[in-house]
Image (cartoon, rainbow, N blue to C red; front, side):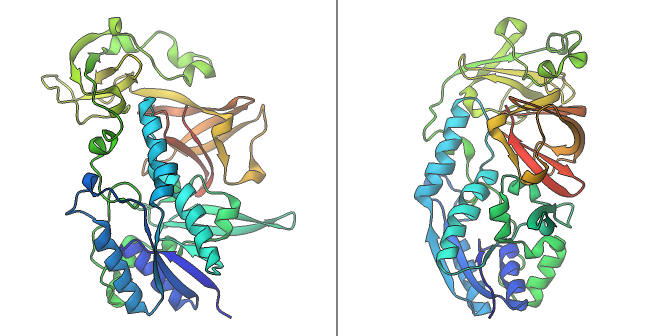
Length: 390
């Protein structure tokens, strides 16, 4: 009897080819479109409206001759993702909704809905791979980078558990994006030439400031420029690990007021656009925010010492090990390849496990380490774990 798999069909080419490939492999395939948002006022209607995406997914399902369903998770998405985003931005942190959407929606609520339909697996159009090894007689699932180096999406799945991975299939993980489009053309799928969507997970392309301003009110404050000399204090790079992993902080007396902003909670470390302040020899970057005092601190150029840090910290409660069998013990030190944002090249770091959490010291300075974002660590091409940056 064929195994049943429910495919998360978003109306894009990747999930369309996912459904097609699984059908070709002999699975009993059901397509399901998730509707996660109802407020059209913050979506760019001419770019990725959900109705068009749903229709495209339906057309592909009809072409393949598979059942198709639409499921509404808008209330749960608001509770688990949107409200969390508002809270984080309000506190001056920058969340990653795509990572949360995979953990909370696609591989939790969606998986449970699929199991109610008798599904053995759920499948998505992520560019990543899954492998399995046996350890002490038990299967251990490995999350591997996608074969396409320009599309590897393992980072977005860095919060998955062994139980979630056990039920997941990623059919396009072995393919390049160009190969996926070729398959879609040969199968005559309507999504073959459709552009990749950009924006919040399953919402569409959102004007983020408009989105945030639904609950976070604009509030004028000062933009303070910090010079390189003021940002770099003597001995920093030779400091102890707790010093190297502590975010930079400044006071207004450390620099010069050069403009105004509409609310510190709308800005994130490393941000270059949206400051609307010119006349400087080099581009301005946000190097710190203070939501309590409503002040943004900026520096000139991407080599500014306030923008580049040597380390970061992940609290014990925010540590997540995809491979629980290799979780670090207190007092242990290890070397891992690390990334702090999607598509960032992997870089080596030394990990120090302490009782209160993980201290991560990079071999090379990292630009724009941002509290609230996720750091993921790899051994070769396998994603081992992740955590929320403190």
